[in-house]
Image (tube, one colour):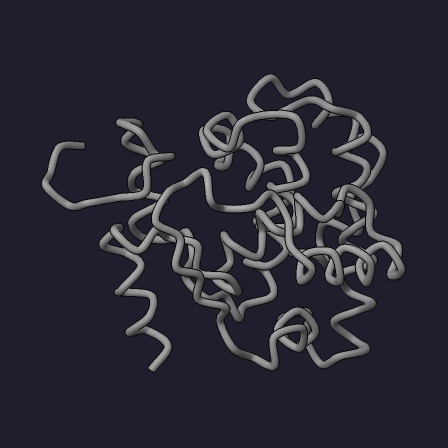
Length: 194
């Protein structure tokens, strides 16, 4: 994608990454299905690049029933085994099983708090954390906020929710605005919050 818009450097020239950066990453999420998607995909990202995961997202959506946690939690052993044979996704046994397990934990938190979204946004009193990073290398891999979220999710029984994974999905789902200040999206996300 060639245009003159200043962007964060991480999408590089990958068209799918650019589209994700420009339209999704950092946009505040309040829909539980989207939260399930972010948590699931960021768990699969552990040890891999986001580019790898993003290019397999549509296949993940099919395997995990559109990231509907009610349908994910009901996945049968044959469905799980079929997922592990599906070359269109990342075939990691621990991560596939964790996705199904996490759906059950997700539903429990949603029931206890009204929605998973209400639970996760309670960590910031419903407000977006707007950072003002000038360079990508200034962005930390985790923060005290992601530490607290990670601890709470682990206590709720989730797997693959270390602080770095939590920071990644907090960024992606707009709890944290980590677009660089020179990126055209930083200001757009700020305006979205007013």
